[in-house]
Length: 342
Image 1 (spheres, one colour):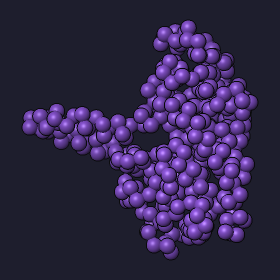
Image 2 (spheres, rainbow, N blue to C red; image 1 turned 45 degrees about the vertical axis):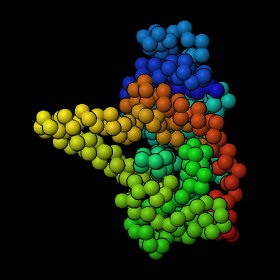
Image 3 (cartoon, helix red, strand yellow; image 1 turned 90 degrees about the vertical axis):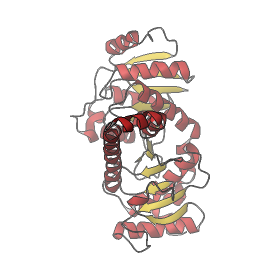
Image 4 (tube, one colour; image 1 turned 180 degrees about the vertical axis):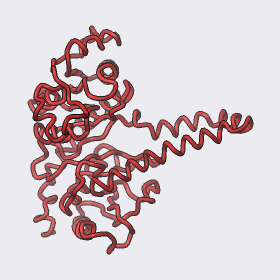
């Protein structure tokens, strides 16, 4: 296995990316390619003791995609950036997956331009797994496509189901559509038409569509994949993140309010740490760009060494699961004209 890292992507690059790559090379039985400004990358290698690591390769890329760059054109204009070079290496078969903590929009656009989508897929989607105490819920899409069509949502459902099967170990994932109510007739024109397509695919035995779901049901365990347009999905994701931070702030305040509370906090400290870890993005690693022909993982912009390590572990799992292969094998059923014939 050979994982390509955008060594200059993220708030803590290159040190965090390089350190995470060195850790992965030592512990995950994988070769790591660090793409970035060679002098800075090698200095970071020396700082973490990875300068002599045999499974590490450095590829020089003099430019960097920044958060100020226009996302849709950043990789196209900056052909010598670490992100663009990494994606072109993946396209050319010089690695099995790419991990980047750089700009989400630029990575999505660059992956679409250079690595390409699975043939027949209209739009790639961001699919984070939201923890719910069990195996989690795949939220697709969460921001890659602000404007969606019924065909997009149909494809998101298929792609999400394949990801849940192969990456989350769910045999027959339950797919729901995010809506303002659970009734079949709820929603606007987009949701209503998508509902018909999803139900037809379910009736044909191709996906396990269980109907509409409200946002309040995200943590109930009623479904495994939640399909929505990127605007609503992103709002939901950011709301969940904000609510989790608020909850821990409030909980901390309660625990330190009095001496008895502090003693109680000591008793449940281990359980609280486990809960915090479950909601920690560093433990998850990153978000897959589902629908791209080869694995591309978007790590959080603030990723530290541990987050990069876990993003690499996720990339390895994506390669082994071959989600793109499953999508490609079923693409005929994911096109609007074919869907209407079911």
